[in-house]
Structures are given as structure tokens and as C-alpha cells.
Length: 138
Image (cartoon, rainbow, N blue to C red):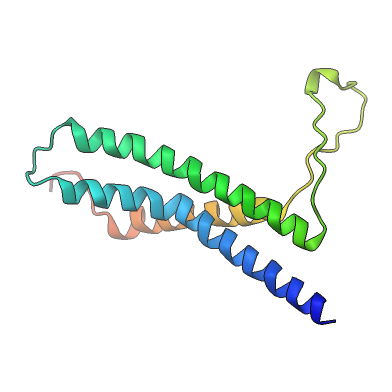
């Protein structure tokens, strides 16, 4: 019984870490790199350096966090005993009359990522329609 409770707690903690990591992936990393680049620039006419820093820093950071999220998902699968076995059948190897089922089972990371992308899009929409004023001259 105690082992089940500890597994449940660890599984919930892993889901929380995946949720924080996925929100960091879509919101924290871009905002953080843009903030860092803005602090490194002292004039209103920056050179190409801060732009390159942002263009390189954001994708590299996203790949690193994505790898960490994938590792957390694997650990979650091992803790809960739901490690998926992925069967991917390429489209040209299927019969046209074959079943239409997906060869990729859903994992908790899939659900967390869809939720975090939806949250990021909602935050962008609120910023765009509520806070970002018109750029047209008045």
C-alpha cells in the first residue's frame, strides 16, 4: 500500500515537472532569451549580435528542454508501468483498405504538450488582442 502511494506521488510529481517544463518550452524560453538580449544591448540601434543570440539560443534551448521532457516521460512510463511500445507503420506500407488506427499510443507527455501549446496560444491571443496596441499611426 505504501509503495502504491509513493508511486502515485512520484507519478504526480513527474506530471507536474512535465507541465512546468512544457510551459517553459513555449513561454519561458522565448521570453527569457529576448529579455537577455534586451539587457545586453545599450542603444536603440542594436548590432546583429543580439539577433543571432536569440535566433540560436531559442532553438538550442528548446531542443535541450525537449530532450529533458522526453526523459521525464520515459521515467514516468517506468514508474507507472505504462512504457509504450511504439509501432509506426509507414503510410506507403499500408493497404488502402487497412485499418485507420494510429500506430503511436498517446503518452502523458502528449497530453501535457497539447495543453501547454493551447495555453501558450491563449496567452498570445490575450496579449495580441488586449495588451498590444495598434501599430497604425493615429
